[in-house]
Image (cartoon, rainbow, N blue to C red; front, top):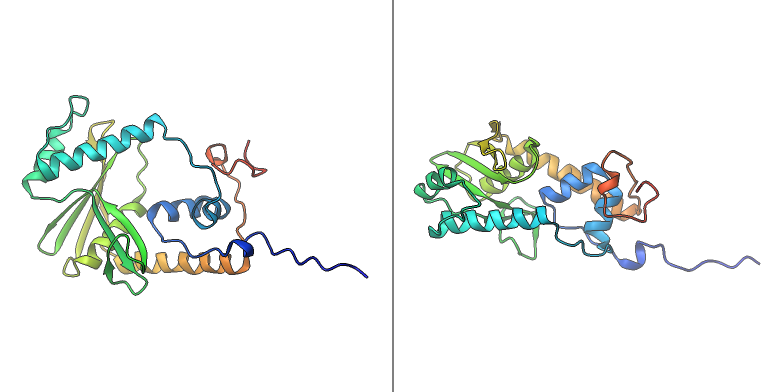
Length: 228
């Protein structure tokens, strides 16, 4: 008589839960479902060391936050006073943490029922118009999704806002990126919920396919056969 293997499936015994969604998760999910599962659902990968690029990006965000919110002068290595000063003059609150529940209501970034969350680098609200400025210290890559998620978070907390524009500030090149119309937050909300359904289905079926691509060499899932 053949023995029955009662060992629980590898995902089942970990009792994975739906992760809190964010632009970072959505971006990772679009690259590879398996990587997203390992990083954000199972969370079984070793903690990656902070690279010099990551450290610099964090330092820039902290310095811009202090300059805009508290008036602390920027370090000499960060020559972006011409970008920070107008935001400070508009009384912008930099690095705002925002969250949304599954029902679309605004909530705290760390709320127990937070469904989607993110940080707004420098949001300006003027009547029913808003401008989102997002600091970037790396290579230029105009991905409107990050700005659209930010617009969704902003409008949830400020439902009177109807027109939302998003622009990246490419600090390495010392210039503002192109304008993105992020006003269609209903479309963004529909997209987020579609991804959420796919993620929940993947968790329920334990099916997170590996998606080979040009970014496999930078993937933190080093035990994957697609990692060079």
